[in-house]
Length: 225
Image (cartoon, rainbow, N blue to C red; front, top):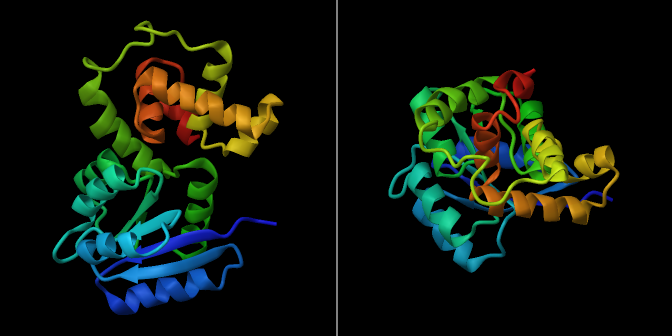
């Protein structure tokens, strides 16, 4: 039986927010536990309600916008995954939202099926970026930082198994898919993932992707093929 994904929605457009809620509530494995009209409302409700697994966040909202709300929530609730759902397709908006901790970036003109796929992939793998977003990550978040990236030869070396797990993470495999591919338990895979975050000093999955590309474990073409 699939685990039910607990979702919170933050968007100041009431009609749009209610429409998304209606779509998600029809899915057996999804439950919208609360809605918020802006970032300030969202942060307040996070303190009053059980934590969601995923927050679907608009960018342009009054009081506290989506970028600032994401920064705050990443510090106070680091286990909550944030999906940006917005009408802004500008590269700088995408790069900024990913940089502050969003695990996916979806346009409001996407189809319901694509949104559901994104939510399921984020829940299973921890992140989900389409080809366009991956190219923005390459252009804005990887290239400018090549001179300051932590080297693969610094401090602790990655083990052969950790490298295998890292490459599959970059291909957006879920923990269970990695376990199946490498004939490991899901718990063992989670241990390797935690070791990768610790050894590379990355805070999240996008950090691991950037690390892997900058240190030539994978190429951007391998990820988006």
